[in-house]
Figure 1 (cartoon, rainbow, N blue to C red):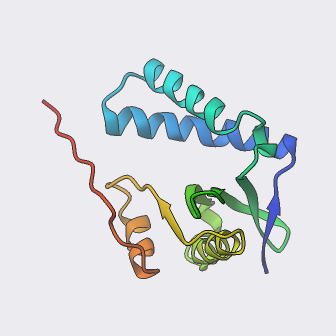
Figure 2 (cartoon, rainbow, N blue to C red):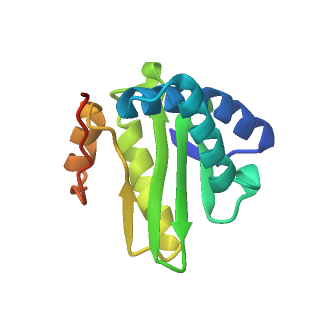
Length: 152
């Protein structure tokens, strides 16, 4: 059984230790930044997005559990004023992939967002993440814009 449990402060700190290095690596790789600059940008972004850590208003941070075992993470924001939600991060551990957990998490995100008054949801995905793009497309997500770059 899949459940979604709000993170407490210890779980939030553990999540940040897990998530930030991957985010920094992806940012550095996709935007051709050195690791130091990517780290600085990521840390500033986290401070802006989560000034009160897991208690930041509008931010929703969950552990995804499969029969009480940690299977992944889900982080999204709902703006009641703008009536929209944004998915910041979804991650399913390797041992739990190909079991429909990411799809369940996306449905949970959509339902929670709708319950909080959102009229639509959005997300960002790196172009190299073909599996995620396929899942989002399957669930009805459409491209809203395309950001492109070229290494010189």
